Length: 171
Image (cartoon, rainbow, N blue to C red):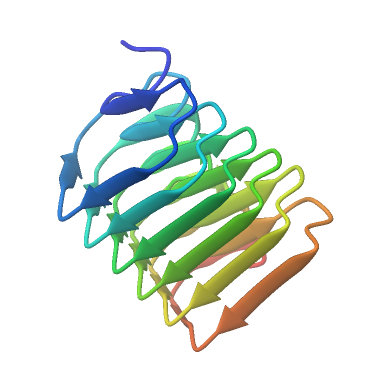
């Protein structure tokens, strides 16, 4: 079992990282990131029309785990389905991630203790979630759809759909 990222582990500064029309299926990341982990200062990332199904991480980011000064990430029309992690089954954002946009993404049948679909903690500045769906996600404690745990400066939710998510606090 791997400690970090069953699929791709990015551990260096990358000026531009693009993932388009890929599938990450049943990857196991051990501690962090079932499919993809961005661990250092990645300046720009774009993930579009990419599918993450059945990926697992023991701690964070069943689908994707992003940490450390990732300046700008755009997710468009990505599918996160059936991923599992203790925190952030679909996507886990952690530490000084300055600008994130999720548009037209689907988070479904995810399982986590905290933040089944999308989990943010520790210093994210600007996050926009637009026209995304969060359905049938389960979190044991909090956030069947989304959990925000830090004093993030700007979170915008526009035109999203939340249905049949389950959590003890904040489904």
